Amino acid sequence: MKVIQESSEHHFLTCLESLKADPSGWVTMHFSFSRRLDHDSIIEDPERISEKLAKMRTASEAFLADLLRCARSYEDGLLYLFADNDVLLLAKAANTDKQARAREIFRCATDRFGGKQADYGHLSDDLYLFQRLADEKFLTARRLAAYRMMAEVNTVASIGVRRKRREDPLVLIVEDDRFTASYASNILNKQYDVLLARTGEEGIIYYIESAPDIVFLDIHLPGLTGHQTLNAIKKADPEAFAIMLSVDTEKTNVLNAHVNGAHGFLKKPFSKDRLLATVQKSPFIRRVKAAGHPSQTDFYS
Image 1 (cartoon, helix red, strand yellow):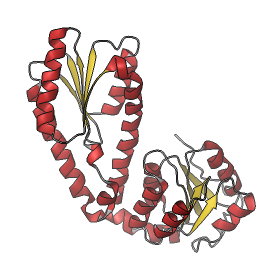
Image 2 (tube, one colour):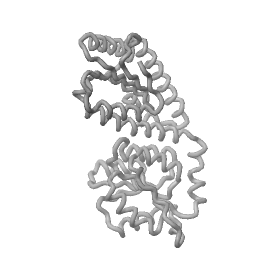
Image 3 (cartoon, one colour):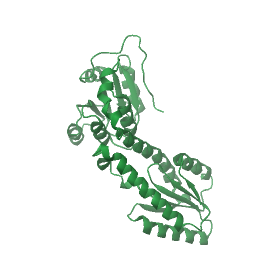
Image 4 (cartoon, one colour):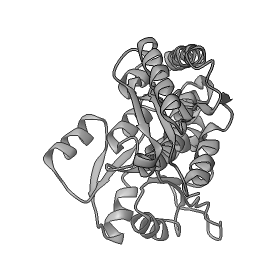
């Protein structure tokens, strides 16, 4: 049994690609610690984030050791420990005996794992779902990176100072729709430096790293929602000036945006004049970009 802990998301993605032509005979066992991770609980006290993440990592590593003991006589398999602490066993079970042994391993591991976040499947039946899972692993790895960034006390404490000392104003746009992001960036980068993030996870990291003067947050993002992202940013910087974006103006969304500390709500599609006027509402926008200064726009990776 080969254990993959380093760059496990990349290894899993590559492995699935190699098995795509013939996934028959492979069974999967997925034990999801990440489903137990509650966003609101994690960010509630930034000073305890590192402690909580370390506790979860210790639990997942202990379970990994238990699973290895359950599967000690099973050689044809790959055992993954992902950055988000999920554990996944991809086992070759080409005959009836191997399939029975795989089921036995799953029962043993589930007894030790506890809870309902354990799934058993056949790769040939669920290949598409596991390809999506591989993509999700990259996103949840970024979520853990965002939490760790929130736990960097000195970096977070310097957000206000760095924002005040920066020469040119900076706008952060967190938007997964490329058209909207490009449209807004093309308008704003003539007067401001613009930083783009595609997910809420990236938005949190970029916010803490860059201390923008204003952040535009789409409500409907992959992974963390705009509301969850706003909560995290406000935990890091209570003075953050945030504007929510959405194609709809449902009363619940508008109310939640206000309750969570947003300073406004911009309905998509929006006009150039409306966007520029909204930016000027930020108390941190004291100037426009110096003439001839190149834009620092960071496009999606």
